[in-house]
Image 1 (cartoon, one colour):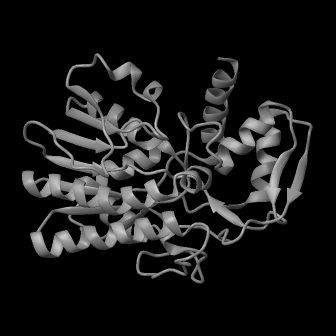
Image 2 (image 1 turned 180 degrees about the vertical axis):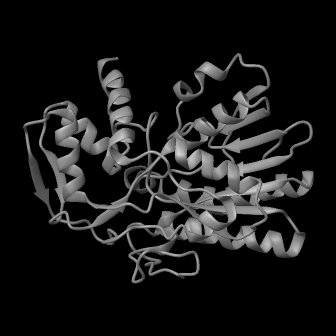
Length: 311
């Protein structure tokens, strides 16, 4: 196949580029590098069948030749980055999704949207199934990301219904692993960076809020299976093993032998109190469940971050 991946130099996008290139597909990665990094795909630049285009997909997308799959994974994805690039986040969720869908429509290709667990907001249903409509503030400090993704899902389903585009929507839950940016503001790089520097880990609130962490290789496997499935609506891809942020901080200190302990700061507004996917649909449709437990995944991730800090 020939696959276009927007956000191809990002954390998840670059791992998708690796997977499809390794399987012998042609890959066109598009990224404007505001949060992505060429370092993530540098090893692919001379690979057979790989092409990189530096472009903002909020503007018209032009790709020469036929395309079999368009994967729209471009967007700032951490609170720090989507707060800094608030307008760009809204544009890539709206205009970028429109342009990526236009490319899929022109080529009669399949379309895969990277959505997020943030469409559920601060959930009142637990764990969160795809049928839950969410509890999201459209004017809050996270709205630029949450609502951009909700709008992107609405546009994707409209193109499916009106233009018969073969769509897939993956709702991603707290993925982590190699190639995350140390300074992107998410809890995994925050905690690991602090621990490797011998600093106390910053926990917001009392740490009772929960997250469910999915290692990147499991996420990629789920996305690949979703492409081959006959499901046009949203599918949760994440690890249903839930852990409190306080217990996660303790685990990181143990895995890194960090004696500095933990400090607490006030909880940011609209920070979800619970986050855990119901993956019944993924199990049934994709025969998919995560294979990498948190200790194994974090050991690999910490080892990678050690190398980044040394470099």
